[in-house]
Length: 201
Image (cartoon, rainbow, N blue to C red; front, side, top):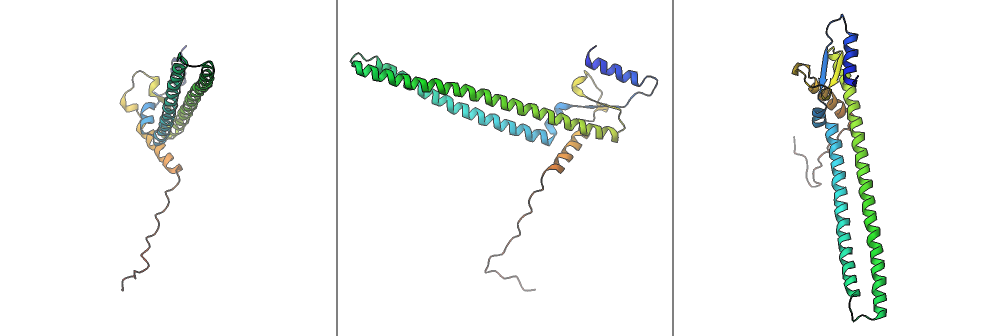
C-alpha cells in the first residue's frame, strides 16, 4: 500500500463512526515564497552560487591563458633554426608549464565539486529547517482552528480552497521569525555643533 493511501486508510479508520475530521492543507511551495526565513536563506544560497560561479570563471580564464602559453611554447619548439640546447630548454619549459596547467585544471575541478557539495548541503539543511518550522506552526494553527489533520498540498491531487490554511501558517512563521531576530540598534541622538546654543525659552 502506498504511503499516502495508507495515511488516508489510518485517518478514515480512526474516525469511523465519528464526525468527519477537520482537515487543513498547507501549500509548501507558497511557504517557500512568502516565509521570510526561507527567502533570506535562499538569498544566501544564491549569493554563494554567484560567488562560486565568479571564482570558476576567473580560474577558467587563467587556464585559457596557460593553454595559450603552452601553444606558444610548442610553436617555438618547432622552429627548425632552434639548436639542440634550445630545443631542450623549450621542452623543459613546456613540461613545467604543462604540469602547472594540469594541476590548476585538477584544482578547478576539485573546487567545482567542493562548491557544489557545500551548496547542495546548505539547500538540504534549508529544506529541513523550513519543513520543521512548518510542522511547528501548523500544529499551532491546527489548535487555533480546531483542526484534526494538516497535510501538505503536494500530497493531494485536489483540495477545495476552504481547507487551505497556508496564509495562517505563513503569518505564524513570519511572526516567529521576526521575534527571533536581534533588535535593530537605536538611532544615535543628534548632537548640535559646538558653536550652537539652545534657543532661549
